Image (cartoon, rainbow, N blue to C red; front, top):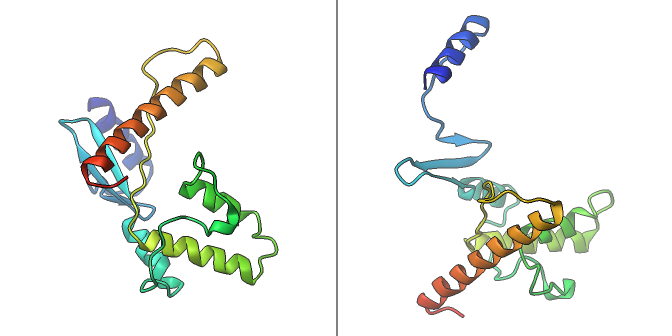
Length: 157
């Protein structure tokens, strides 16, 4: 903490600034911390609502999948990042069908669907990039098992 305060003092000497305390929001993301548990949570719910409102789909019927079935998403890759990547390929020359696909994606977000995402250092040192990927896949598998068990507890398959 002493180093952080020293840095703040040096920065305020060079720049006009105010210390507003711990950040509560940044880049449209709500920040919540639990210092005792050592967790930091970011939520983009307010940003999603703003985007939905901007494109006038905030009252649209929610969707349960990120993209329509004609995109033939595999069970291994049905996440929001994949869907955004697919529709982003057509940004240079979008057509009506692409606009409909983006609206579908926005309607999926309208459903308040939970997205699980985490970034942290691995608990072990990998000796190669291949081993690094195996460790990451194993961790992702553990998360999937946990999520499946959790959904089962909620009565979802």
